[in-house]
Length: 173
Length: 173
Image (cartoon, rainbow over all chains, first blue to last red; front, side, top):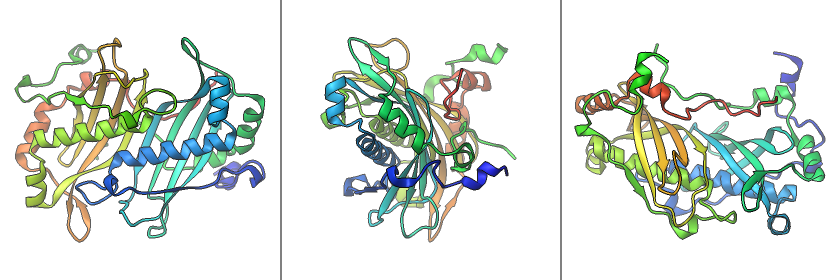
C-alpha cells in the first residue's frame, strides 16, 4: 500500500462542495419475478443520481438550454453485490474517480441500512458534448473544471474505490 | 489473427437452436432531456432480452416456480456507441460468449436500420441460483447445460465479439 491508499474515502479537498447523497425511491414496478430490484433499475438510479450531480455542478437544465451542452454516457458498469428489496432505503454516494477537461469517470456506491458495506457499485464514463448539427465533445466551463478537480479523489483513493470495473469473464480454477 | 477469429459471428453449432432476436419497444418515457434513449433503458432492454433467452433455454416461469431456481445478474457493462431516438426500430442479438455449469457470460448487440453497425453493446454475467432460505449457486439442468454449450461462440468468435468489456478509465495521451 502506498501513502496515497491511506487517503481512501477522503476527498482531495475540503468537503464544502461535496456531492450530496442521492436517496433512491424504489417503485413497486421495479421489483422483478425474483422478488428483488430488477438489475436494470440500478442503472436508472445511477442515471438519476448523475442528473443530481449535474445540477450540483451547474450543468443543470438552464445551463443545457443556454449552451446546448450536456453530458453523454459513454460506458456504464454495474456490479451487483447484494439483493435489494422493495422495503430497502437505498442511498447512492457518487465520487469523482477521475476527470479531465471534458470527461468524468464517476463511481456510485449503493448502500442500505440492512446490509454492511455496499449492495452495489457502478462506474460510469461521461463526456461533455455540444449538441449542434453534429454532436461534438466540448471542454467544461472553467468553474465546472475547477469544481471537478477539487472533487476528484486522490489516485490512491480512486484505486481503493471498489469493486472497480474490469473485464467480465468466467475464470476457471 | 488466428484461425478461430475467422469464425467470428458464426456459432459453434448449427443455428437450429439459435437465440431469436429481441425487438425492443421504446416507451416515450424512456427518452430523456437530451432527446435520446436514456442510458439506463438500454439496461432494461438487456434485462428483457435476457428474460427471453431464459424462456428460450427453458428457464421460464414454470421452471422457476417448480425448482425455485433462477438467474441472478452479477455484473452488467453497457457500451453506448450511437444515439437511439424514439422512432428507431431497435433489435438485440444475444450471444453466449462463455458458459460453465452455473454461469453465462452473454453479449447483447443493439442494432437499428438507421445506423451501420451496432448502436450499443452490453455484456453481462449471469449466475444460476437456488432461492432457498439462503440464495446459493446451482448447476444448470443437463438439457440447459447442453443447450448453452451448443450456443457458445468459439473462443475466436467470442474474442472478436465487441466492443468487449474492459476497465473504464480516462486514458491520457
